[in-house]
Amino acid sequence: MKKVAVIMGSDSDFKVVQKAILKLKEFSVPYEVHVMSAHRTPDAAAEFSKNAKANGFGVIIAAAGMAAHLAGVLAAHTTIPVIGIPIKSANFDGMDALLATVMMPTGIPVATVAVDGAANAAILAVQILALSDDELSSKLENMKSDMAAGVAKKDEDIIRKANEL
Ligand code: RP5
Image (cartoon, rainbow, N blue to C red; front, side, top):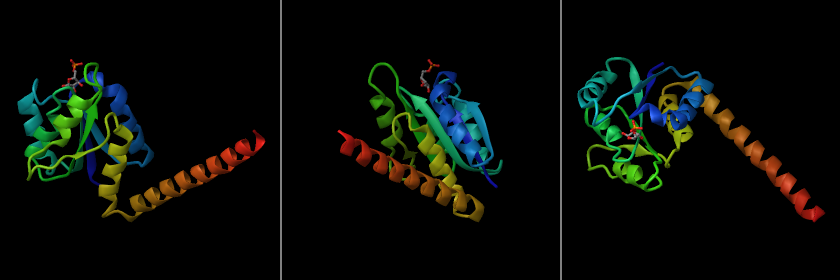
């Protein structure tokens, strides 16, 4: 199976990014985790991305906050899908990173999830890999069934609670 690269702009992003890592583990998807920065280590980021396909990666997840150019820079150097996680920081509640990640020019897409949406980034990466992996696809089907069962249970509970008022 192809690997997922989980790249974060700083170790300060780890608290959020770990939710993506946990989700990939849940699906037994192989991954590599790195700190790389579009600004502080631009050469390393470009080099990693240029070689990502040859090194067995199928998807790159890139998390960054503030002037969050990491996902875009990685996407500029590869043809494999890049998923961006805008990380919330103190000043603008993540709007800065959201816009920097999502507003890409035509030709260089970054599939951007919600601010701090690390679990969804991993699920989307799994969905991409599942296109050519039936076992992974079944695991996604199971996840959706479990979610639906969870909501059905909440529905039952809330109806009961409302009737007891
Ligand atoms: C971004 O700047 C990083 O992704 C992080 O979210 C933010 C702050 O980085 P540190 O100053 O905490 O290293 O590039």
